[in-house]
Image (cartoon, rainbow, N blue to C red; front, side, top):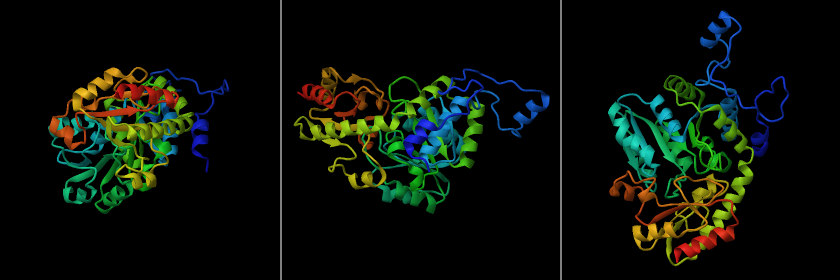
Length: 386
Protein backbone atom coordinates (compact mmCIF):
# COMPACT_ATOMS: atom_id res chain seq x y z
CA UNK A 1 0.00 0.00 0.00
CA UNK A 2 1.29 3.46 -0.91
CA UNK A 3 2.40 5.76 1.90
CA UNK A 4 0.53 8.98 2.79
CA UNK A 5 2.93 11.35 0.99
CA UNK A 6 2.80 9.27 -2.20
CA UNK A 7 -1.00 9.23 -2.17
CA UNK A 8 -0.98 13.02 -1.69
CA UNK A 9 1.30 13.64 -4.66
CA UNK A 10 0.33 10.87 -7.08
CA UNK A 11 -3.48 10.59 -6.79
CA UNK A 12 -4.61 12.37 -9.94
CA UNK A 13 -7.43 12.25 -12.44
CA UNK A 14 -6.86 10.54 -15.77
CA UNK A 15 -4.75 12.60 -18.18
CA UNK A 16 -6.47 14.24 -21.13
CA UNK A 17 -5.38 13.87 -24.76
CA UNK A 18 -2.82 16.62 -24.05
CA UNK A 19 -0.89 14.37 -21.62
CA UNK A 20 -0.44 17.16 -19.07
CA UNK A 21 1.81 16.42 -16.07
CA UNK A 22 -0.14 18.69 -13.69
CA UNK A 23 -3.91 18.35 -13.35
CA UNK A 24 -5.80 21.03 -15.36
CA UNK A 25 -8.68 23.08 -13.98
CA UNK A 26 -12.06 22.06 -15.40
CA UNK A 27 -13.97 25.33 -15.21
CA UNK A 28 -17.20 24.07 -16.70
CA UNK A 29 -20.70 24.14 -15.33
CA UNK A 30 -21.96 21.28 -17.50
CA UNK A 31 -20.98 18.44 -19.85
CA UNK A 32 -22.22 17.35 -23.29
CA UNK A 33 -23.75 14.03 -24.30
CA UNK A 34 -23.25 11.99 -27.43
CA UNK A 35 -26.95 11.36 -28.04
CA UNK A 36 -30.35 11.03 -26.34
CA UNK A 37 -29.57 7.52 -25.07
CA UNK A 38 -26.27 8.69 -23.52
CA UNK A 39 -28.18 11.48 -21.80
CA UNK A 40 -30.91 9.16 -20.50
CA UNK A 41 -28.44 6.56 -19.21
CA UNK A 42 -26.34 9.24 -17.53
CA UNK A 43 -29.26 10.84 -15.68
CA UNK A 44 -30.59 7.44 -14.59
CA UNK A 45 -27.09 6.72 -13.20
CA UNK A 46 -26.62 3.66 -15.41
CA UNK A 47 -23.42 5.42 -16.46
CA UNK A 48 -20.84 6.81 -14.04
CA UNK A 49 -19.95 10.15 -15.59
CA UNK A 50 -20.05 13.91 -15.04
CA UNK A 51 -23.42 15.48 -15.78
CA UNK A 52 -23.33 18.87 -14.06
CA UNK A 53 -20.69 20.43 -11.79
CA UNK A 54 -23.20 20.84 -8.95
CA UNK A 55 -23.14 17.03 -8.82
CA UNK A 56 -19.54 16.13 -9.73
CA UNK A 57 -16.55 17.65 -11.52
CA UNK A 58 -13.14 16.12 -12.36
CA UNK A 59 -11.37 18.48 -9.94
CA UNK A 60 -13.73 17.91 -7.01
CA UNK A 61 -13.59 14.15 -7.66
CA UNK A 62 -9.78 14.19 -7.53
CA UNK A 63 -9.81 16.14 -4.27
CA UNK A 64 -12.36 13.80 -2.66
CA UNK A 65 -10.45 10.75 -3.88
CA UNK A 66 -7.27 12.00 -2.19
CA UNK A 67 -8.97 12.78 1.13
CA UNK A 68 -10.78 9.42 1.12
CA UNK A 69 -7.54 7.50 0.56
CA UNK A 70 -5.76 9.54 3.25
CA UNK A 71 -8.54 8.88 5.78
CA UNK A 72 -8.95 5.21 4.92
CA UNK A 73 -12.46 5.85 3.58
CA UNK A 74 -14.17 4.48 0.50
CA UNK A 75 -15.76 7.63 -0.86
CA UNK A 76 -16.90 11.16 -0.05
CA UNK A 77 -18.37 14.46 -1.21
CA UNK A 78 -16.87 17.95 -1.36
CA UNK A 79 -18.56 21.18 -0.28
CA UNK A 80 -18.17 24.92 -0.74
CA UNK A 81 -17.18 25.41 2.93
CA UNK A 82 -16.51 23.44 6.08
CA UNK A 83 -19.85 24.49 7.55
CA UNK A 84 -21.62 23.40 4.35
CA UNK A 85 -20.06 19.99 4.99
CA UNK A 86 -21.21 19.94 8.64
CA UNK A 87 -24.75 21.11 7.87
CA UNK A 88 -25.29 18.95 4.78
CA UNK A 89 -23.91 15.84 6.47
CA UNK A 90 -26.19 16.22 9.48
CA UNK A 91 -29.25 17.43 7.54
CA UNK A 92 -29.01 14.59 5.03
CA UNK A 93 -29.06 11.94 7.76
CA UNK A 94 -31.46 13.42 10.33
CA UNK A 95 -35.26 13.33 10.24
CA UNK A 96 -37.84 15.19 12.30
CA UNK A 97 -37.89 13.69 15.78
CA UNK A 98 -34.27 12.50 15.69
CA UNK A 99 -31.80 13.26 18.47
CA UNK A 100 -28.06 13.99 18.42
CA UNK A 101 -25.56 13.48 21.23
CA UNK A 102 -22.63 15.86 20.80
CA UNK A 103 -19.60 17.08 22.68
CA UNK A 104 -20.32 20.54 24.08
CA UNK A 105 -17.03 21.89 22.76
CA UNK A 106 -17.86 22.42 19.10
CA UNK A 107 -17.29 25.30 16.69
CA UNK A 108 -19.68 28.23 17.27
CA UNK A 109 -21.55 27.75 13.98
CA UNK A 110 -22.04 24.03 14.68
CA UNK A 111 -23.47 24.99 18.07
CA UNK A 112 -25.79 27.36 16.18
CA UNK A 113 -27.10 24.48 14.04
CA UNK A 114 -27.90 22.41 17.13
CA UNK A 115 -29.49 25.23 19.13
CA UNK A 116 -31.08 27.59 16.59
CA UNK A 117 -31.85 25.79 13.35
CA UNK A 118 -32.35 22.06 13.95
CA UNK A 119 -35.05 22.69 16.60
CA UNK A 120 -37.13 24.23 13.76
CA UNK A 121 -37.29 20.74 12.27
CA UNK A 122 -37.91 19.01 15.60
CA UNK A 123 -34.33 17.71 15.81
CA UNK A 124 -33.02 17.79 19.37
CA UNK A 125 -29.57 17.39 20.93
CA UNK A 126 -27.86 16.66 24.23
CA UNK A 127 -24.36 17.85 25.10
CA UNK A 128 -21.67 16.13 27.13
CA UNK A 129 -18.52 17.82 28.41
CA UNK A 130 -15.20 16.68 26.97
CA UNK A 131 -14.13 15.22 30.32
CA UNK A 132 -17.44 13.36 30.78
CA UNK A 133 -17.31 10.70 28.07
CA UNK A 134 -18.61 8.20 30.63
CA UNK A 135 -21.89 10.16 30.75
CA UNK A 136 -22.60 9.75 27.03
CA UNK A 137 -24.58 6.54 27.40
CA UNK A 138 -26.94 8.17 29.91
CA UNK A 139 -27.82 10.78 27.24
CA UNK A 140 -28.73 8.25 24.54
CA UNK A 141 -32.46 7.96 23.83
CA UNK A 142 -34.44 5.61 21.56
CA UNK A 143 -34.54 8.42 18.97
CA UNK A 144 -30.77 9.15 19.12
CA UNK A 145 -29.25 8.69 15.68
CA UNK A 146 -25.85 10.48 15.67
CA UNK A 147 -22.89 10.84 18.01
CA UNK A 148 -20.89 13.94 17.02
CA UNK A 149 -17.57 15.36 18.20
CA UNK A 150 -14.54 17.43 17.26
CA UNK A 151 -11.09 16.38 18.42
CA UNK A 152 -8.98 18.36 19.04
CA UNK A 153 -11.75 20.78 19.94
CA UNK A 154 -12.13 24.37 18.79
CA UNK A 155 -10.94 26.52 20.50
CA UNK A 156 -10.06 24.73 23.77
CA UNK A 157 -7.78 22.11 22.15
CA UNK A 158 -9.28 19.32 24.26
CA UNK A 159 -8.94 15.70 23.15
CA UNK A 160 -11.72 13.12 23.01
CA UNK A 161 -10.94 9.40 23.07
CA UNK A 162 -11.91 8.23 19.57
CA UNK A 163 -11.65 4.56 20.49
CA UNK A 164 -14.12 5.04 23.37
CA UNK A 165 -16.52 7.02 21.14
CA UNK A 166 -16.31 4.27 18.53
CA UNK A 167 -17.19 1.62 21.10
CA UNK A 168 -20.20 3.59 22.37
CA UNK A 169 -21.48 4.29 18.84
CA UNK A 170 -21.17 0.63 17.86
CA UNK A 171 -22.86 -0.61 21.04
CA UNK A 172 -25.88 1.67 20.50
CA UNK A 173 -25.95 1.50 16.66
CA UNK A 174 -25.27 5.24 16.31
CA UNK A 175 -23.64 7.02 13.38
CA UNK A 176 -20.32 8.40 14.69
CA UNK A 177 -19.33 11.64 12.95
CA UNK A 178 -15.97 13.25 13.75
CA UNK A 179 -14.91 16.77 12.73
CA UNK A 180 -11.19 16.16 12.05
CA UNK A 181 -10.38 19.72 10.99
CA UNK A 182 -7.65 20.49 13.56
CA UNK A 183 -5.79 17.21 13.00
CA UNK A 184 -6.14 16.67 9.21
CA UNK A 185 -5.85 13.16 7.73
CA UNK A 186 -2.07 13.34 8.21
CA UNK A 187 -2.21 13.46 12.02
CA UNK A 188 -5.33 11.41 12.78
CA UNK A 189 -7.69 8.92 11.11
CA UNK A 190 -10.96 8.61 13.08
CA UNK A 191 -12.26 5.80 10.84
CA UNK A 192 -9.59 3.50 12.34
CA UNK A 193 -11.26 4.03 15.71
CA UNK A 194 -14.82 3.41 14.55
CA UNK A 195 -16.00 6.68 12.99
CA UNK A 196 -18.55 6.29 10.19
CA UNK A 197 -17.98 9.73 8.72
CA UNK A 198 -15.14 12.26 8.93
CA UNK A 199 -15.61 15.96 8.16
CA UNK A 200 -13.00 18.59 7.32
CA UNK A 201 -13.05 22.31 6.82
CA UNK A 202 -10.50 22.25 3.99
CA UNK A 203 -10.25 26.05 4.38
CA UNK A 204 -7.85 25.49 7.27
CA UNK A 205 -4.71 23.33 7.23
CA UNK A 206 -5.66 21.44 4.06
CA UNK A 207 -5.42 24.66 2.03
CA UNK A 208 -2.83 25.93 4.48
CA UNK A 209 -2.34 29.35 2.96
CA UNK A 210 -5.59 31.18 3.66
CA UNK A 211 -6.68 31.29 0.03
CA UNK A 212 -9.87 29.35 -0.60
CA UNK A 213 -12.93 27.93 1.17
CA UNK A 214 -13.83 24.26 1.06
CA UNK A 215 -15.20 21.31 2.98
CA UNK A 216 -15.36 17.55 2.61
CA UNK A 217 -17.03 14.53 4.20
CA UNK A 218 -15.71 11.00 3.67
CA UNK A 219 -16.68 7.59 5.02
CA UNK A 220 -19.35 4.91 4.78
CA UNK A 221 -20.60 4.67 1.14
CA UNK A 222 -24.27 4.21 2.08
CA UNK A 223 -24.21 7.35 4.24
CA UNK A 224 -22.23 9.29 1.64
CA UNK A 225 -24.89 8.33 -0.93
CA UNK A 226 -27.54 10.02 1.24
CA UNK A 227 -25.31 13.09 1.66
CA UNK A 228 -24.65 13.20 -2.10
CA UNK A 229 -28.37 13.06 -2.97
CA UNK A 230 -29.17 15.78 -0.42
CA UNK A 231 -26.34 17.98 -1.73
CA UNK A 232 -27.21 17.34 -5.36
CA UNK A 233 -30.62 18.88 -4.65
CA UNK A 234 -29.56 21.65 -2.25
CA UNK A 235 -26.44 22.83 -4.06
CA UNK A 236 -23.55 23.33 -1.57
CA UNK A 237 -20.98 22.04 -4.11
CA UNK A 238 -17.30 22.96 -4.06
CA UNK A 239 -16.12 25.05 -7.02
CA UNK A 240 -13.74 23.32 -9.45
CA UNK A 241 -11.10 26.02 -9.01
CA UNK A 242 -11.12 25.71 -5.23
CA UNK A 243 -10.99 21.92 -5.57
CA UNK A 244 -7.94 22.26 -7.82
CA UNK A 245 -6.21 24.54 -5.29
CA UNK A 246 -7.03 22.17 -2.40
CA UNK A 247 -5.87 19.08 -4.29
CA UNK A 248 -2.56 20.84 -5.01
CA UNK A 249 -2.31 21.85 -1.34
CA UNK A 250 -2.60 18.22 -0.26
CA UNK A 251 0.67 17.48 -2.09
CA UNK A 252 2.55 19.44 0.59
CA UNK A 253 0.31 18.68 3.60
CA UNK A 254 2.75 16.26 5.26
CA UNK A 255 5.82 18.49 5.03
CA UNK A 256 3.83 21.55 6.12
CA UNK A 257 2.28 19.75 9.10
CA UNK A 258 5.65 18.42 10.26
CA UNK A 259 6.96 21.99 10.51
CA UNK A 260 3.70 23.43 11.93
CA UNK A 261 3.78 20.84 14.71
CA UNK A 262 7.49 21.34 15.43
CA UNK A 263 6.95 25.11 15.74
CA UNK A 264 3.77 24.72 17.81
CA UNK A 265 5.40 22.43 20.38
CA UNK A 266 8.24 24.95 20.88
CA UNK A 267 5.75 27.83 21.23
CA UNK A 268 3.66 25.82 23.71
CA UNK A 269 6.77 25.04 25.78
CA UNK A 270 7.66 28.75 25.79
CA UNK A 271 4.13 29.76 26.88
CA UNK A 272 4.21 27.27 29.77
CA UNK A 273 7.10 29.24 31.23
CA UNK A 274 5.56 32.68 30.67
CA UNK A 275 4.23 34.27 33.89
CA UNK A 276 1.36 36.08 32.09
CA UNK A 277 0.10 32.91 30.37
CA UNK A 278 -1.73 30.17 32.24
CA UNK A 279 -3.64 26.97 31.44
CA UNK A 280 -1.58 26.43 28.29
CA UNK A 281 -3.09 23.58 26.26
CA UNK A 282 -1.38 21.74 23.44
CA UNK A 283 -2.07 18.02 22.79
CA UNK A 284 1.60 16.96 22.91
CA UNK A 285 2.48 18.87 26.09
CA UNK A 286 2.78 16.40 28.96
CA UNK A 287 0.70 18.79 31.07
CA UNK A 288 -2.31 18.41 28.73
CA UNK A 289 -5.13 16.60 30.61
CA UNK A 290 -5.59 14.14 27.72
CA UNK A 291 -1.91 13.84 26.73
CA UNK A 292 -1.92 10.02 26.77
CA UNK A 293 -5.05 9.87 24.58
CA UNK A 294 -3.51 12.39 22.15
CA UNK A 295 -0.36 10.28 21.87
CA UNK A 296 -2.49 7.18 21.23
CA UNK A 297 -4.54 8.59 18.36
CA UNK A 298 -2.49 11.45 16.87
CA UNK A 299 0.82 11.34 14.99
CA UNK A 300 1.80 14.85 16.18
CA UNK A 301 0.07 17.58 18.19
CA UNK A 302 -1.20 19.89 15.46
CA UNK A 303 -0.65 23.63 15.17
CA UNK A 304 -3.27 25.04 17.58
CA UNK A 305 -2.49 26.19 21.12
CA UNK A 306 -4.90 27.72 23.61
CA UNK A 307 -3.98 29.60 26.76
CA UNK A 308 -5.44 32.11 29.16
CA UNK A 309 -4.06 35.56 29.78
CA UNK A 310 -4.07 36.75 33.35
CA UNK A 311 -6.41 39.73 33.58
CA UNK A 312 -9.43 38.37 31.68
CA UNK A 313 -11.11 39.89 28.65
CA UNK A 314 -9.34 43.28 28.78
CA UNK A 315 -5.93 41.63 29.06
CA UNK A 316 -6.94 39.38 26.15
CA UNK A 317 -7.85 42.37 23.99
CA UNK A 318 -4.66 44.19 24.94
CA UNK A 319 -2.61 41.15 23.96
CA UNK A 320 -4.39 40.91 20.58
CA UNK A 321 -3.74 44.63 19.99
CA UNK A 322 -0.05 44.23 20.89
CA UNK A 323 1.03 41.52 18.45
CA UNK A 324 3.17 42.76 15.56
CA UNK A 325 4.16 39.68 13.55
CA UNK A 326 1.14 37.45 14.20
CA UNK A 327 -2.05 38.17 12.26
CA UNK A 328 -5.31 39.08 13.95
CA UNK A 329 -7.77 36.85 12.13
CA UNK A 330 -10.58 34.35 12.75
CA UNK A 331 -8.98 31.82 10.41
CA UNK A 332 -6.46 29.14 11.37
CA UNK A 333 -4.13 26.64 9.75
CA UNK A 334 -2.35 29.30 7.67
CA UNK A 335 1.36 29.57 6.85
CA UNK A 336 1.13 32.82 8.84
CA UNK A 337 0.71 32.64 12.60
CA UNK A 338 -2.67 33.91 13.77
CA UNK A 339 -4.01 34.95 17.17
CA UNK A 340 -7.74 34.94 17.94
CA UNK A 341 -9.81 35.92 20.99
CA UNK A 342 -12.70 33.40 20.72
CA UNK A 343 -14.98 35.02 23.35
CA UNK A 344 -15.29 38.19 21.25
CA UNK A 345 -15.04 36.63 17.75
CA UNK A 346 -15.55 32.99 16.65
CA UNK A 347 -17.72 32.05 19.66
CA UNK A 348 -19.20 35.50 20.43
CA UNK A 349 -22.74 34.34 19.47
CA UNK A 350 -22.70 31.93 22.42
CA UNK A 351 -24.04 33.17 25.74
CA UNK A 352 -21.49 33.72 28.50
CA UNK A 353 -22.82 30.59 30.19
CA UNK A 354 -22.46 28.51 27.01
CA UNK A 355 -18.95 29.88 26.46
CA UNK A 356 -17.87 28.82 29.93
CA UNK A 357 -19.55 25.42 29.51
CA UNK A 358 -17.49 24.95 26.33
CA UNK A 359 -14.32 25.96 28.18
CA UNK A 360 -14.11 29.44 26.65
CA UNK A 361 -13.05 31.85 29.36
CA UNK A 362 -12.92 35.65 28.83
CA UNK A 363 -9.11 35.62 28.67
CA UNK A 364 -8.77 32.58 26.39
CA UNK A 365 -6.52 33.09 23.37
CA UNK A 366 -6.17 30.68 20.44
CA UNK A 367 -2.87 30.65 18.56
CA UNK A 368 -2.59 29.06 15.14
CA UNK A 369 1.17 28.57 14.83
CA UNK A 370 2.44 29.19 11.31
CA UNK A 371 5.59 28.50 9.32
CA UNK A 372 7.62 31.60 10.18
CA UNK A 373 10.88 30.99 12.04
CA UNK A 374 9.87 29.84 15.50
CA UNK A 375 12.20 32.35 17.19
CA UNK A 376 10.31 35.22 15.53
CA UNK A 377 6.90 33.80 16.54
CA UNK A 378 8.04 33.43 20.16
CA UNK A 379 9.58 36.92 20.21
CA UNK A 380 6.29 38.46 19.06
CA UNK A 381 4.20 36.58 21.63
CA UNK A 382 6.72 37.46 24.34
CA UNK A 383 6.57 41.20 23.70
CA UNK A 384 2.76 41.12 23.41
CA UNK A 385 2.42 39.29 26.73
CA UNK A 386 4.47 41.97 28.44
